[in-house]
Image (cartoon, rainbow, N blue to C red; front, side, top):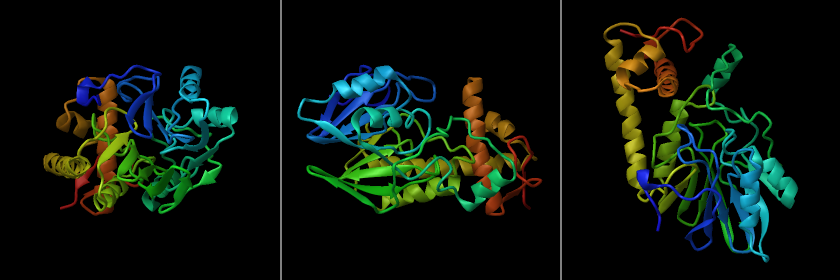
Length: 305
């Protein structure tokens, strides 16, 4: 039985069959930002593709290797993006199996012009933890296809949550990493995340027919079309909230986050403020708000009248 929502609580390290050819193994890294932990997926019946090997963890490495039947071998390691809860185990798994690592590119690749300028101005930001050592053996681009006997995976570049974020499509299934999840909306934290890219990637996914999304954290998204529609509406609503709040005067991202989100912990406040900062950078780029250049997390933003 596929669990959904807050009922999602699979056993750590135990492979679960989601449907023919797709298994999930939960990594031992639960937290306020990762929910129950990172979902690692095993795709195929003989030649196995591992999607998002997860964080550095000997326990999780052994769980992945133990999941293999005698007639199975890992031939591909696919990484949706290089946050530290998704990609670090790729290297050790590659060394253990001989499989090559596939991803869009190293951390920082795929950044928009706006975010490259932000980095060039000296802003580091982030907040979720980037895997600075991630380097795929094979760099993928939007529209690529990876094929083995029994499966064929198409590649979509879906930046927004992270600049090198990929979504992998197998038949009518999407492995969406942290871009689309059921348990929470995705974090967009500059300069790794870009709100304009996030919205464009959501609309890109809307243009295709999907049966189910298997995300990087939490339960499967059983109605992808509705979830995409909600995420776009949610972000547009946050944008409207920010613009409405700024009518009362200039504010920083943290001040706006306290007013709009009402977070109940410092961790959630920081996360909310980073999301607000992403919105403010996008609104500034579209000439709705302004701040002293260059934009910074601590600066005050105001409406352009």
